[in-house]
Image (cartoon, rainbow, N blue to C red):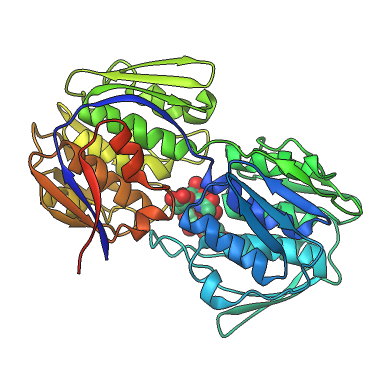
Length: 419
Ligand code: EPZ
């Protein structure tokens, strides 16, 4: 089992380039299933999740190879419409491939997806959306058997702006003659990036990023190349690491708009933030102040994927803060571990009350999910003494060698293997 071994107390100084977005690349890889010819994805991020999704595309028949920072995907050899459960059960994004497979083959057999244990994570919105397009879906023994032979363009209305369901329905509509509308869809930057990728290959998708997306069916998608957006959650994680440790850090390859909701929360009361082009600098030289209330919301609201990380920062802030987690019903699993480090946090249903303490103290903690694990690392960076963070395979799903990035900024953190 791999762990991080951290000696807390170092300030963070220096410059770092942000990796490509995990949650942009995952649906883009599913989008490759629709294409003919060859796709080159530049700056391909080698997170565990993106490598698993690449294996799923290979499992369907694509030939792929990684060349430096690029991945090349030859799509003509894709000929299977079924995904094995050993791969699909590892990641949430395996369900995104359903819409793409239906578009290409008019049939599909996919298992229920995996993903972080942050809630029930149902897929009813995905199924309802695809059924509104005319797909016939039967759920049998943990597999979805789908018949897409009668799918037609339609107006699809989502009960909730689900990121994955929006992506799935978009992928399922690309080749449907006529115009499909998705109402009440998600507006995340990763949705816009998927639409930009597909449009670069010949798709006709309009208004991605708004609450109504329109897709005009086309005959086929050709090959091409694409550079996905940078990861706004990795950006926010390292911004908060700088605030919690103190220091002066510049992050490159940042899109300010994608992280504006975090900047709005921490600028001035916790740190100074400046942006110049794609360079964002955070300067923190005093104990952060509490933030009266943070509510996680769909984009452009405060992202649920930064909730654990800002909770760690608030654990040592001056004053009492409140976090309301509106997106996932089990996304406070990191709280017990933060309390082991000395945090003073009270949880009642979807609300956490964080009473800032002057100091956290090193301890042995365990990750329960990807972003909760990242939050524990941030707490360890500021805790007095030594902290070990176990089960860091959760973190490797969405951060590529996090310890290397933090070492480059002056953190005292090592990856160790515990026997
Ligand atoms: C995506 O998950 C992200 N994952 C998550 O990031 C992120 O937290 C989430 O969007 C919200 O922003 C990827 O993009 C791979 P949703 P997704 O469908 O699509 C409920 C990370 O750390 N819902 O927008 O699964 C659901 O239970 C991960 O990188 C249904 O009820 O999120 C949740 O309460 C964690 N039925 C809410 O909607 C459905 O069919 C939002 O989920 C689908 C979702």
